[in-house]
Image (cartoon, rainbow, N blue to C red; front, side, top):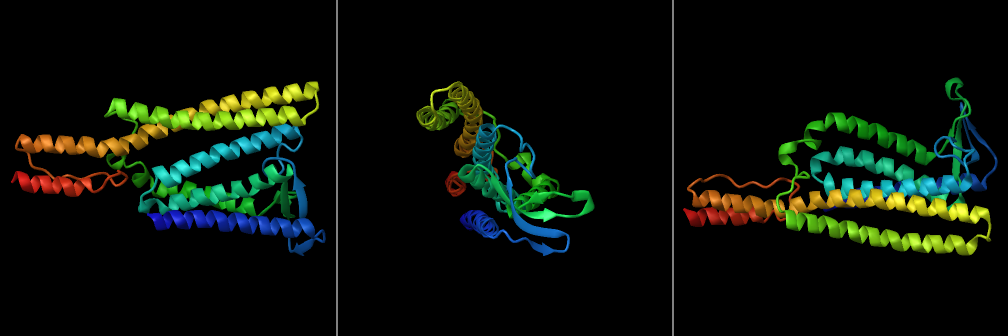
Length: 288
């Protein structure tokens, strides 16, 4: 499992690095490179994707893109490295990794430059004027592979008999764990929000624009805080189920043995503490 984690993380680093290298090259070389119906040259993209929303307010574009990137990063890490972790789902995890890598490559441009570096212009009749970059291609490949995986692996992804869900089996522990996880995320978010608000007010001159920008930033951070807290709380319920679930299952197993009912003890593949299976077998041998 750790090998898959390193593979996926390494893939993100390699794809994002390659994307940035290509962007730096075409940004510094203004001479177009023609290749059939494709033209390779630097084009600044102030929009979100394929040039969309280029006319929107610059502050709104940067904040919106950065915010979406933060939320997508949190979801990606949660899904790929904590939730859908079993080996059979490597195809789905690869698709999500490609999708995230593409988003990360463009988000770095947006945060660093205020715009995205595009360098591939299509001259086909039905795509006339479309301009994109390597990160966009990686992102589209990720979307395609993810959609394919959701259909191809749907039985394994949504195999309910092998999943820990939002069911509460140990209320005190699960609610406490989920609340603490959400609280840690909220405190970190508030620190970032206070720093960002202070920096915004300090750098911008006193004006109506500064007040509007500060309000926009505060409202945006508040919405993100609420969404993040809900997501972390739900993740906390699922993860705490994986921790308390094996203990709950062992307790039922021992009670069945005391009642004279012998059965096989088997944990779910995503559960923590797999060593409990060996403990259950040892208890079963002692009971005989």
